[in-house]
Image (cartoon, rainbow, N blue to C red; front, side, top):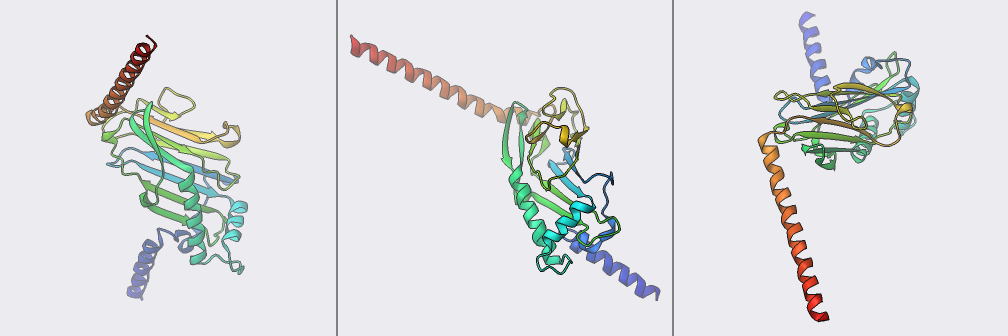
Length: 258
């Protein structure tokens, strides 16, 4: 009996690991819950600069009402159950929308960053809990992106988040983990520059319209500073060439008038 129980436990653990990327909620329905149960929905964003590559953690938690609506929308065959295939399809749609709505920016300083959308290949982990409703009937979805950006090679990072799904999210909690080799010189809400705020919360109804912008800056390494020199030098050369071209044209025009 004990041996059979241990074998069942091991099989369950293996199954949970195998299903963890897309079907965690299908395997473990009871674990989903909101930090603040009275909220309709909540969001959490974590910028992790502490590892060899910058990571972005993005989590959305739905209360019972919005979770029931999400499950009903995912239930394509109308049997009042969300199958593995249906939850996968729902997660694919949510992921595609998130990729369209969130951009990341990196550079040597906050005034000199290059931005791009998130990419599907950067999705390192995808978890969901609650497609099979548990006692709370809540639903959670978590995306973890490995952005393949070495913090040593940059001095600034910004997130531009315009993901508004589903409507009804009431708060957004933000956490910023600093690099393990340097202190942050600026961090927090981009609309409130200056200072270092590693944790803060947006009340969505009180926030100005538009994307959520999260910034972090730290002393740029030598490689980050050096990488900016070619761009600055090229810009300087182009400006000089443009100025010389204008001088030649002005001289030619003066000669023809004479």
